[in-house]
Amino acid sequence: MANDGPVEHGYPHLETVRAAITALYKRLSYDTVQLFATSVPPVDVAFCDTDDLYLGAQRVARELVRHYRLPDARLIVSFREMTQAANVELAAGPEYFVELNDRFRTHRRDIGAALAHEIMHVYLHRLDLSFPGTRANEILTDTATTYLGAGWLLLDAYREDAASSQKLGYLTPEEFGYVLAKRALLFGEDPSTWFTSAQAYTAYVKGMALARRDERQPPLTAAGWAGRRRYARDRRQAQEHRHPVPLPVPDAPYAFSPDSHGPLRVSFPCPTCHQRIRVPVRGRVRARCGLCRTVLECDT
Picture 1: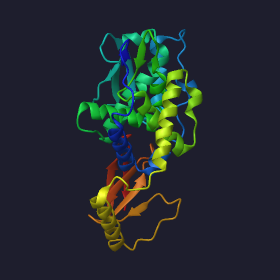
Picture 2: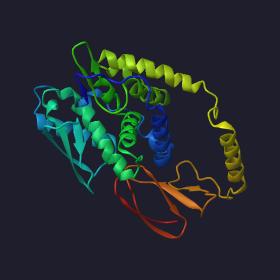
Picture 3: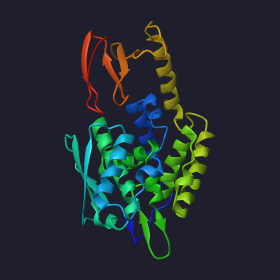
Picture 4: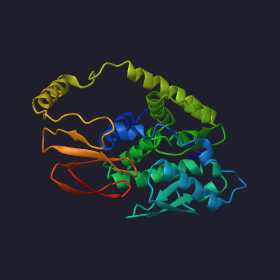
């Protein structure tokens, strides 16, 4: 969190941001990302100055836990003097202790933004998804928070004038706008109506311009000769090793997926959080969802 200091602008972390979006799709799958088509609405995280500080913070935390589909996660929110904006203790769960900077006692409208980032740490911790290095991992957290529907709060917390400045998160305002624009183009939503900060809207417009420019780029332009050859080889090998398994009907809970590097696997959605679980075809299977901890048993 920057306060009364310079705010970095531009796209210095763009490569890491794009890698983070790719990592989300690889770990969650396209179907799971589609479950986050609706962003956190402003009414669910609204915080009035007359609300009780601790009860209000717990209410906002519960709404964000529900949005991230972490049914058994319980957030204990406290406030103390600290350098950073917030901190979360990533224990085994199901209880997680979140500490917020004492500054939020008087800046309550930004509590939702701080909690959105910290609860995403819990979400990624349960997914066992991380990047090497603290800074890259924080960029992954900011990107995932924004792409999965709660990051507009982080961008809206950006305010800057001649006397002071404030920004939450590790991404620049334009990078937040870029990820938010990527999400808006995917789900057809317009988050600009939720902004209370004029500077946040300006950053979103700049990010949207870059996101639209990405859509006009032909695929594999930056891959180089080796990358294009590797892509053609992978496609050819996938066709050669395709297993003759019939496609399931759309409403079937199981989806068989051939794997050219291993045995045939079967995937099915968790009944609690809908995260897809992939296990080898080997008869009776007992598996635990890495996200919501639901234990599942089935015959494959």
